[in-house]
Length: 294
Image (tube, rainbow, N blue to C red; front, top):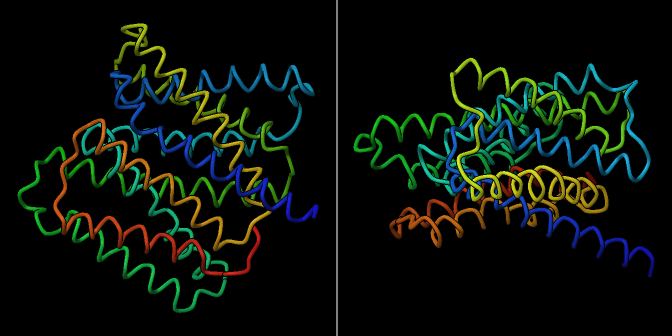
């Protein structure tokens, strides 16, 4: 009974976390500020919320974990720099779909570098995802604007940056275990410093133009940077990769839905098939080890 309750709790936690972070890209678009500015406020407000959370619950760990967290903050800053531009140049849904190709990058690194077993599932995932991307973007590539093409490239670079972040997280946590909230606080604060430097270097103003923009920025931090990420981190260890991979597909899937509903994204039937194939490829890549626990 306890195992059943624990498993149900993990599923609910992962499900709600995936739903929350599915709003990341739409909220970035709605915030209507420069890409680096929205990236800065996401992690800056997130760090403040996490600092209050830790201060109220158990206190903040200031003495350990920082070297690894600073490196993670750098990779996460790259992720946000590329992704937020892809969101604006392409669309929230497609940018999120491209970013989730990190699953295949992770799988390739695991097979080639860490000598993990891949098998037919990974190969099939790569081929299916590439076929989906070609149906979604490749057929009309020459007709796309330079800005749109650059947004696609930024989306794929997001996948590389996020894969580097996750691989580094795995190595850092193996060497020094730190609670998920503590680690997220340190990473958010480190990333905020880097994003602030990027914003100032680019000459963008940190002034939030309206109360509406401020509301969206706070929501990104609260729902996506803090609550959603923590819920996913807590739900993953109790589930098999096949179940977790399926639930996590809600993020790119729902991001496409929000894009269609709120930003009037228009895609053809063939492009819709491309989206579904890409999601299927991501799922296969995320479930190389069917019985593996995260």
